[in-house]
Image (cartoon, rainbow, N blue to C red; front, side, top):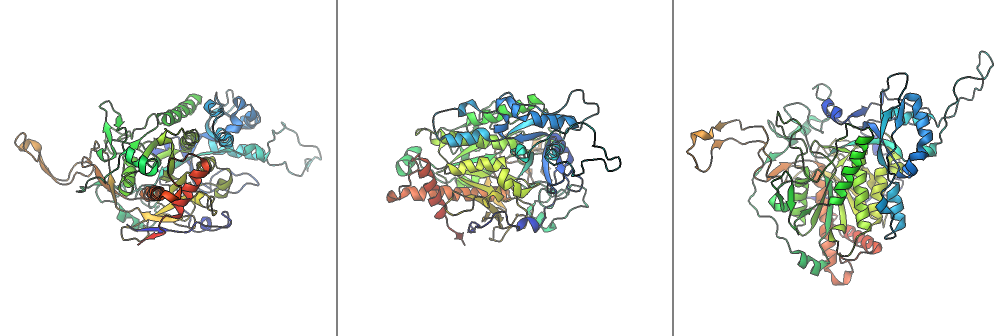
Length: 601
C-alpha cells in the first residue's frame, strides 16, 4: 500500500497560510438534518458582528447550547451570574447544570495537574428564553455569544449627547472583561469524513458542497467518480481471504507486555465476525473476552448522562448517545434507506484489523449513524478516556490506550482562536501529555482551509512532543484523492479511496436489485435461493468498498500500533507496552512515531 509521511511543521503555527488559500464551501448539510439537530449554518454575510472582534467564517453550530469551561461552572455556576445579566437583555439565559465537574476526579491518585485540566474542560450548557421577556425570543447561540462579546466593548469616547450637551441616559450597561469569555464557545456540529450522499439526488455527499438545489455546486465535479452510480457511496463486495491471524493475549503479554490499543471515537459497532462482535438477540451486541473490538461501559454511561442532563436543562432536541451500538439503521423506517454513516466504525475497525491484527480497538460511540457529531459529546468522551488512562491499574490492559483515531471534523469560524482557546484542543492536549498519539482525518471538502481537529497538528508540531497526525487520502495508485483536504496542516497521506474493509453483516436496506426473478419461482429449499442482479445495500457478505479520509486516519493509527509492537520486540529497547509511567509512555510513543516509515512506495 502507499503511504507518505510529511515532516511535522515547525515555526509559528498561526502564520497566514492555508486559511487564506482555498475557502471551503459551506457544508452541504440538508435542511432536514439541520432541523433534526437544531443546528444552524453561520453565514458570514448575515451573521451578527461586534466591534473589535474579527468577522466570522462559515461554520455549523447547535442553536440552543454553548460549551462552557468547567472552571466557570463550578460552584453551581455562580461565576456566570454577570453573563446571565448580559444575556437577559436579549431574552436568553444559560441554564446552569446541577454539577460543575465529575466528583470522581477528586482523587489522590494520579497526576493532580491532569485532573485539574479535566475538571476544567467545557460541557454543553443549554440556552433558554427568559421568563417574562416582553418580546418573543429567537434562542440562538451565535447571538448569545456575540451579545456577551458586545459587553466587553467600551462605550464610545463621546460622553455627552452632541446635540444637547447632556450626559446620555438609559439603563446602565452590564460590563464583562474579555477574560470573562475565555472558555465560552459555540458547540460546533461536526461531520464524519467518509464520502456520503447519492449521485442520483445531486447532493454529491460532502464532496462538491451542493446544498441540493443542483445550481450552487462550487466544488470539482470530478469527485463524483468516487460515488457508485445508482447506489450508495458504499457498495457490497466479496472477499476470499481469511482474517489475518492473531496471537493470543497471553502471547502478546509475554512478547510485548500487552496488546497495543487504538481508541476509535466514532459511530459504534455492529455484528462482524472478523471483529469478534456478535448480535445478542435483544438489539445489542456482545464481544469476545479477548476479541478485536471492545467498549467501555463507564465512558458510554458518562456520554449518555451528560447528554440527558443537557436535554433536561432545555436542549430538548439533543440526540443523546445512549449505548455503544451503531444505530439506527435508518432515520426514516418507512423508506428504509440506510443512514449515511451506518457501519462507519465497523469499517474503520476492519482497516486496523487488516494492518495490525494483534492490536485491539476500544470503540467509543460519540455519534449516531447519520454522520453528525456534537462537540460536547466528543469532549466528554475524550475527558473520560483521559481519566481512565490516568487512573489505569497494571491489570487494566484496555486502559493502556496508545493511539486515538478521529474520523470527523469541522471548519472553525475563528481558526486562530481555536488554536488557543478550543476545549476540544485542551482535551486532546491532555491525551498527548499522557503519551497518547492522536490521529485525525483531514476531511473531504477539497479545501485547504483548516479542518479541526486535524489542523491541531500545527499546534502539536514541535520536535520532541507527542504529535497529532493529520491524514489526507490517497487513491489506489498513490496519487492524492481529489476529494481530500490539503494544506500545510496535513502531515501524512494514506490510502483512503476505494478501500475494502469490514461492514456489519446484519445490514440490508430497502433498495432492491434492478432485476430479480421472484424466489417463489424456485423450488422450495433449493440453493442458491434465487436469481438477481446486485443488491446495492445488502451487506450480508460482511465487506464493502468505501472512500474518505475517514479510512486514511485509522490506517495511520494502525501503523503506529505496529511500530509500538516492533519497538517492544527489541529486548534492549526498554519499550515494552506494560510500562505504566507517563514518561515511559511518552518515550514509547515518540519512538513509535520516529520509527514510522516515512514513505511506502
